[in-house]
Length: 276
Image: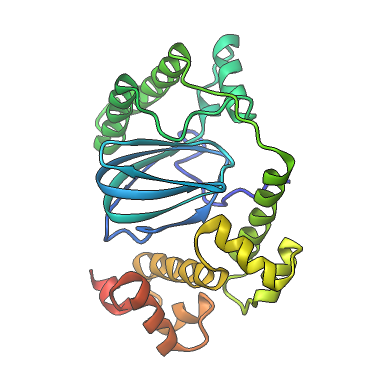
């Protein structure tokens, strides 16, 4: 059973989307999520604590992080800036059997790319790809597609991929976490209790809190509040709705509590966030 992120990255005929993230970005702290696309994260400043499924590591300026498809991921920045490209490798399939087989192996999880890619030639190829996405000059569509194919060609040639084995216990934990995250995503605008979330994971409330903290590094309540604030931040920047309505739409029944929580997480009030 698959619970993919709903958001479309890019368009159907060009499924590539670049995000430039710094402290002013509404998703500066990356909430846990997953999608069928792959993700490249190139850190340009500071450091980023990255969690992929149930393992965490610190990445620093100059590092290249690769997020395989369907992997639950989130990140906590530390005075960090990075560029992130999300795209669907299936778009690169052309009917050429050797190329399509390699991409299919990645998408079916027979092959995995390492979390951190240290090869300098691959890093340079990713930088060129990100620059084209950022510049959007004439011909960039051709160049992005070509550079993406070149990138996977390098990865295959250098045999940077690996076969990763997860035992049933770990996969069961990941499955339970995905159920809870999907439940939060679909119900964040209404009242959600710890009991509701624990029920989705088919765990007792006491054990669920420990399970969630071990998997994500935060508590279920803190995650829920952060997710609601992130959704509110997107509305503040992308709509003309008043702050009170946004608060209620994002699951806050008290405006003062919303403002207090928003400021604790974003270090700025909703009003000033919208102005900035």
